[in-house]
Structures are given as C-alpha cells and as structure tokens.
Amino acid sequence: MGAGLSHLWPTSRTREFVRAGARVTLIAPGKFWYSGMGPGMVSGFYEPGDDTVDAERLVTEGGGEFVRAEVMRIDPTQRTLHLRSGAQISYDVLSLNVGSEVPLEKIDGAAEHGVPVKPIKNLLTLRERLTNASGDPRVVVVGGGAAGSEVCANLWHLLKSSGRKPELTLVFSEDRLLTQATPKASSILRRSLEELNVRTAARSRAHPVTAHAARLAH
Image 1 (cartoon, one colour):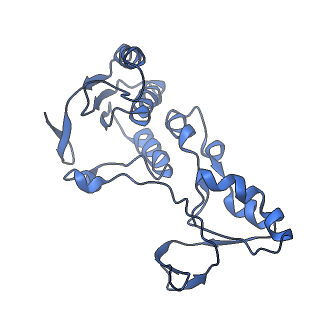
Image 2 (cartoon, rainbow, N blue to C red):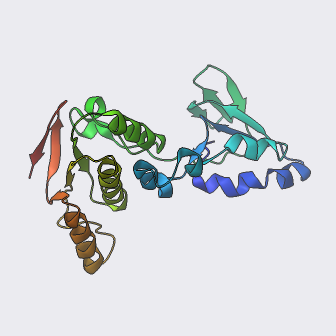
C-alpha cells in the first residue's frame, strides 16, 4: 500500500516474489514522486519526468498487479483494505509506505490559501502557478528545515530566471534554520539565503493566513 520511497526496492523485485509463489499487488494513486528532487523541480533544474518513477510499470513488468486507488480503511481482523471506490482487496501480508502530508489544519487559512509541499506533486503546481503569475510575487515559505530552505532558494531562482524581483520570506519557529544540523551549517545556510535577499523570520509562526497575507506570531 503506497508507492513511497521504501517500496521502490521491493517493487523492483516483484518478479522474485512471483517466482516464489506470491501474488504482489501495489495500490497507489499514481506515480512515485521523489522528495529529494522536488525543490529542484521548482526552479526548473529538474523536469517532472526526472522526479517521477512509473510505479505501475515497475510492478506489472515483474508480473504483479497495480491498482490505482486510495485506501480509506484497513480491517486487520478480516485482512481487508477498503478503497475509496467502495471496492475491497484482501491480503495475507500488508506493507505500508504511503508518505506524509502537511498538517495544514494547524494554521488557520493555510488549507485554503497555501500550497503544501507534500505530496511532492504539489511543487509542480506551485511552479506552474508562479510561472504564470504576473508582476513580482511576494511569497512566504513556512518551515525552516531542509525542505523549506531548499524550496525557498529554488523559488528565488525560478522567479529571477524570468526577470522578476521576488520578495521571499522564510518563516520558522526555531532559533535557527536546519536545527538537525550543526550551528555552523545553519549559519552558512542562512547567509546563503540572505545573499539571495531572502528575509528570514526566526521564532515566528504564520497564523493566520489570508489570501494576500500571513500574520506572524512570536
């Protein structure tokens, strides 16, 4: 269940499972999008085709089955998956790798006016939206981890390459960027962003978010 990163390796060996007598079924809503290349897709350094793996082809070429669907409920007692369509699929062994989502409900207005970076396909939507926008966009990126910082830098390159002057603000609740890295790495990253004229707002939260503004709370 799910065409996530951890499922690519076993899915690529579907033929070995089939030869051993197993029936392999992969259930996913579509292609696999690689998060590590997502920010680069925003700037245009990578194209969408570079960032995707055809999970359906991967499993079917090995003799397995691909079901394009979303699972709404798991019944562990009956070992049954209930799909959004109403169909059911039984299993003997179930592996889960469905990826993650951004909890937009924690920020008022974010679901209506924001673009979550996951699923990764959303980054392509963001790229197209800003490419087609007129003028010099003002963009607020929330989250000072690796993904937020990389998305912010790639947004700058996307907009500058089209001759525009973007106004980018990176908002994060911690004292520094990239808290999982060393303070020196965090400092280098912040200087790199500031050299791109990206404004950083530490110890801040965007709440609420409206159609044209994000109020910062400290």
